[in-house]
Length: 346
Image (cartoon, rainbow, N blue to C red):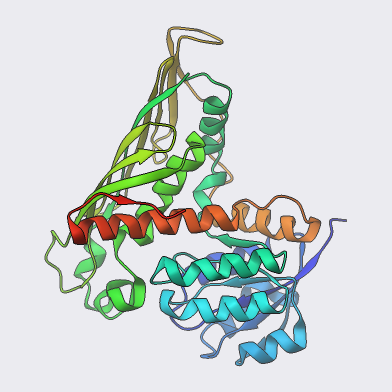
């Protein structure tokens, strides 16, 4: 039997991806039981239905839950501006945290949480779940083994649907309000690709320039479009387009060039990874990755997070890398506001 721990799910009526977290925890063997913290009672029925006997208790008061239950891991999925004090309270008890992004409206609100997590010897993991998608793991391995040689440049885009922005119900949600969300497409979706660019290459983005806009003209005060130029600490340059442009679905793409070849990721395609290298097997030929695209998404990432807390093994993302992704996003926002290049804070 695997080592098992008690997990708290802390959310409210505005929590994001709660159904995905419930399903993931139900499917995680290392999760012995779940206690729900939900001041609105919005997800009590859903939790009973999905978790069944694994749901041990429900609370309307988070502090009471933490004091009474003493969970080993808390999954926190809350409105961005409301999350930091909850995460802080969880860490204060010595409990690990898995947080739905962005979990803050300023990087300055997340940075002290990283310090506290380190002081308490706790994990603080941001839910950047694409890291464990099989094609991403394969791409990172190719780069680490030197198949692309010295890295030169990167180009990527993550484009979702504009349709969601036309719905009056969306206009009322916290995602569409900068003071509650911290930003728009870039902090909600683009952050995934910024993190992957650094995760795959092993290099950090240290300087950015960029623009943001509401090109669709919907009645929201967050950007539906962002474009950024990126400089990495290994000398590589890159660009990113992040926006709500389509009627439905996603267009997503990461291309990486190096001195010995290139790599192309298109996660929504049936064949999501191809590459060319002058080194290794089949030099000088375009190759296609033939692995399975499953498992992917929230469930394997949550499972990895719970397992790391149960076994005290390496987490799927560190607190430092979580903060690095947030600081990169907010640096692009600062660059757009000031029309200047901005250094990403260390």
